[in-house]
Image (cartoon, helix red, strand yellow):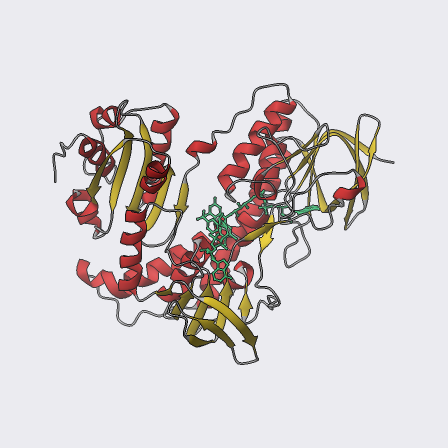
Length: 475
Ligand code: FAD
Ligand code: NAI
């Protein structure tokens, strides 16, 4: 006997669980299926983000940052500690607790919002009168029918061709978040977001980290000036980043991993490391979904094809998050989840792709929204730029973290803010003001005229806005 729902959501990552909750809030009967299983065999909703992504990486970044502060910066404050040591098992255990709190939080939210949760793998079996039949294979097999279906099955780490992840020595993000000890030598392939964040964690804890990047430019999607400032800081920290390499044979053995590569000069090189993280992007995941059963269209990368409204080629079937086009970010997945739920309820859900913020949680943090200076040049847009260094910000000096700056780009004619780029302390939090400003189509003058608390890092944003008009007050 099948169970009938207005909506069946497949996947309980940030795209799926948020879509399920919002649909239930709007009065629909909702089922959400998720396959993720914890080490005791129980459900672990939250997807990549909660289990092996955003949340655990930030937990380890926090622990390793405390360690670095205790080792390198406490003395400046007059605090002496003696020898500071790191118990990796405790750090990883704390991370696991943080993950579990988030898994449990989602199960609680499902109960609160009357979303029926099914632990198992969901796959399309057929289209039926007024909907789609979905089989759940899990601890208890079930047959569900949804009038509408949301596919939110996320993504998986991309492996180098012919080099499988063993998660012991050749690691994806999964293994990189669960190391039992600090490796003496750590190799990272790909200087993207994961490479920099995970490389930073293990470098702070004492690993000698070498990052090998295929492209000749560092963080090509980031504003050039910001990328340059960040690179300078990473170099100073001892995070070795080699650009323009071509990876050759990767040989994993019991003792470690050997990576043959050609450097930017075309010379053959070899990197021997204890552990290797491969972070060269992610691929959309539809494993076990059985899209063929209903004729759900995928593109050549395996992503579910959707239009701007997240509608697939099938009536009543939607898809959101990492499994569709666009940036692979948790907050983008969530926004799409909300918008789809509202559209299913006949409302006008909305996602503004131009104001999705990006954050890289390294030290210094890197955050941006809108277009970079190089994109504006490419698009032939006339703009004014203003920046303000944290060195001239009182709060940053008191914090002891004066690296970086806030940079604002505004339209030369209308003064509308077109992009804000931050490298420095708490850039992840500061960027929210810029997102709000851009959503409200604010001008740089608007920000310059708003009272910002003193002393605060946000004053650097106000000063960057003043700098657009060449009238900073504190620099
Ligand atoms: P996912 O989170 O991947 O969830 C998909 C879920 O669907 C999973 O639970 C999966 O088990 C389940 N599933 C798949 N197929 C089926 C099926 N057939 N049946 C049932 N269940 C199924 N983004 C940020 O915005 N900020 C960050 O700081 C950040 N840090 C990251 C750090 C790392 C190391 C990684 C790897 C990613 C990070 N991301 C971050 C990206 C973020 O995790 C993803 O963009 C986000 O999780 C995508 O959400 P989603 O719901 O589309 O998919
Ligand atoms: P990425 O796309 O950020 O970076 C991959 C890097 O690997 C690129 O610089 C690319 O040029 C390089 N590369 C690709 N193939 C290569 C090869 N064969 N040899 C050498 N270099 C190669 O991907 P990453 O870091 O794996 O992260 C995946 C996604 O997860 C991110 O794009 C992001 O969407 C999400 N994420 C977001 C975070 C955040 O928001 N803070 C944190 C971590 C991940």
